[in-house]
Length: 51
Image (cartoon, rainbow, N blue to C red):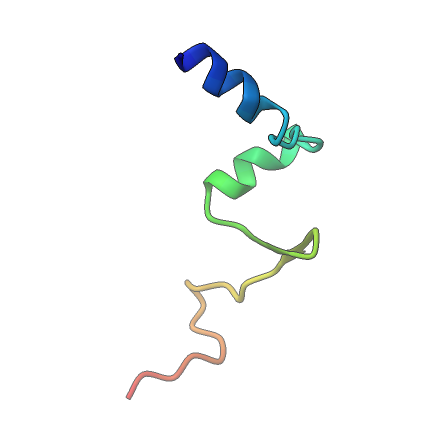
């Protein structure tokens, strides 16, 4: 039963076409429409203001 469920789900899975980006995703990187969204450096303080 489990084999048949996995076999049917396999048709809907999408292959990873950029395995070199998997490490970025696991580290918390954000992508929008396939483009990496750069975050400001959290260590420098940048434009962040604390009230």
